[in-house]
Length: 202
Image (cartoon, rainbow, N blue to C red):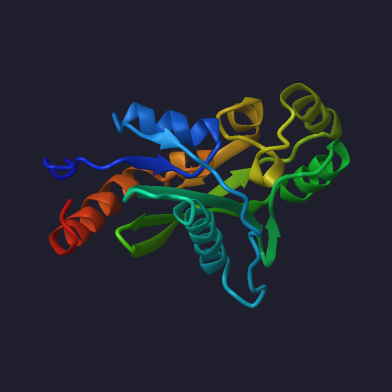
């Protein structure tokens, strides 16, 4: 469990309903606060480093607005196929283009997570291998028109229609594909708080 004397505000720097749902379901009490961040990254970095860097940017943007000491959790999910990184689609045509490239192939879903408290910061990333079957254009268009996946990296959500009927198998954490590797987060959060609270008690 988290430290028994945990008595600090927890902020999730994300508007993602999936991330909010996952944190609530493990019993974590938190508030939601987001701030604009540029989400720039060095294209020479690895995909894992990019996801962590963007997550840290999101966390830092929120921390810079706070007047009280709070634990900030931020995350960023990217979808990778070989050396190509797919973010959120900007239109139906863009979503269709992305899903066409992913269909029938194995790709990686990487979520970077940033934890910040008392001037300390820690990042980690989780990778899940996802195998998508070949989809017809009709299936792709149905999914896009019905579920409108414009807020989802890689233009799909594994918990929706395409995940149920289009994903053959995964290797790794299912919740990571949803947007937050919740089991890994729980473990890393415990360790991060033990270290920071010993050094910076509330």
